Amino acid sequence: AQTVTQSQPEMSVQEAETVTLSCTYDTSESNYYLFWYKQPPSRQMILVIRQEAYKQQNATENRFSVNFQKAAKSFSLKISDSQLGDTAMYFCAFIPYNQGGKLIFGQGTELSVKP
Amino acid sequence: GAVVSQHPSRVICKSGTSVKIECRSLDFQATTMFWYRQFPKQSLMLMATSNEGSKATYEQGVEKDKFLINHASLTLSTLTVTSAHPEDSSFYICSRLAGGADTQYFGPGTRLTVL
Image 1 (cartoon, rainbow over the protein chains, first blue to last red):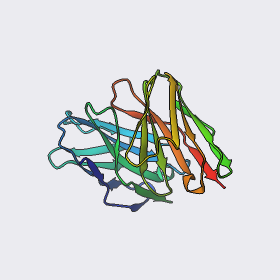
Image 2: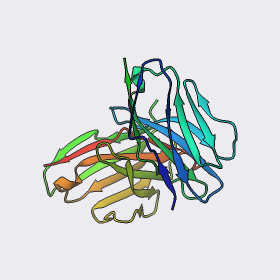
Image 3: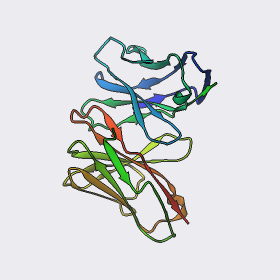
């Protein structure tokens, strides 16, 4: 079975601090795409960052970066210089190659950024 | 800007009536779109894969006669909740697949309340 596990249901961080959200996944596929999506209170799902599994280099998008450890099947998200607008539910997910583009989602981590 | 729109954003209906939700791909001809359901504080649950010009593929446990999906054009998929009941009250989200089947982009969601 293909699964994603986010072991931190809730986290909080002070504004301007750094926080890391954990994600592990399980798949027998060797090729896949990994994602972090953000869902703020508006509930619009927003793509934060995307990683191709065959690339060893960790993806970065401004204040967001990942630590991708393929052998350990780990894909954590680091948010630097946290801002109040980062308060949201964060979902880790992946799409296996050649499976029609279906996303496998984790349970989510609710992040609160405190002033 | 937004690449997927949904209409309506909110709908309230009486038990026993049917409700149609539209999902439009604004920037891309999408042969594949997805429909999800989400309860508060929970992850997204895939209901079905909508394929242009053919029948939708439903996930196990989703009643296809209750949740009718039509994908008649490359930019529009519709979800009709037939004979809605209060337990159908939820947040419904659609997404479209990127051209390479490697990323999903989400609509803003529709909040359905059945009285």
